[in-house]
Image 1 (cartoon, rainbow, N blue to C red):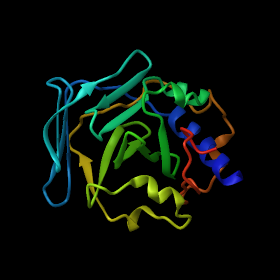
Image 2 (tube, one colour; image 1 turned 120 degrees about the vertical axis):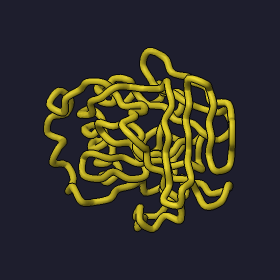
Image 3 (cartoon, rainbow, N blue to C red; image 1 turned 45 degrees about the horizontal axis):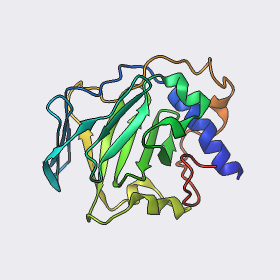
Length: 205
């Protein structure tokens, strides 16, 4: 219980301190070490992944969230305003995230029920900086939530890193001193954390 509570507290601090521009329109390319690419083009409404070329990508954003989905296994949603994370109202997001790992008060790895074959690496000031894809179409990243000894470097998955200066889904504003100012020291910075078990709740409880 304490472990999961600490994850929530750290995540609130992490995302409340993020700055940057929320971008859900335009084109972003993520590249893997073997030359593969994932391309999100919200302007033309297309999504290219290793398993799906020319899929229809919908920008489902509204005034409070950045949201993208192809309605067929790819989905992401996050707050436009960083401080909204401090209220913990993740149920208001179209796709509430599940946290797989948090590192150094700067990065979080999230998976969504509507997108179990993708793991999103979110940087506190950069938005989506990486997307992991399972080695098989049936791989479910939520399965690692049950592994107490899970480490990111043990994943049997391919990581696609964002190319260029493009910013995707970075929240705006916020200062860690504004929300939960004492939470910076909740956890050691070099520890990878994750949910101890799968739950239907939007965040670890």
